[in-house]
Image 1 (cartoon, rainbow, N blue to C red):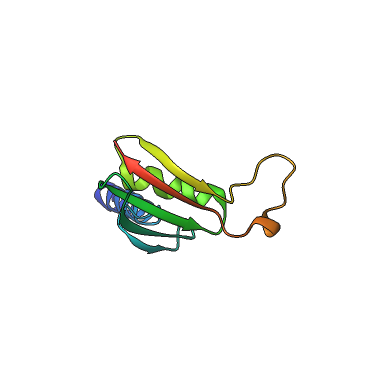
Image 2: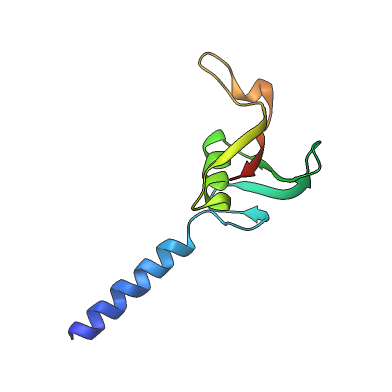
Length: 98
């Protein structure tokens, strides 16, 4: 009985980890984002992330660069206090890990 309980808990933890944002390029349902590897103007690799909401861009950036941090190279249509997101369009960022 005890091993069954541990098996169920381990399986549930695995499912929860699989439901987080994807660390790979391509579309991701968990963060409602899409990431593409690009070459930035300095010739180095970066990631372009578009998302349905700004939080999704941040979640995806953190997942892609884990365990390190990331640097934002470009940010478009990120709402600030008092702005209307519908007017600006879909948020997007370009990041570099490290």
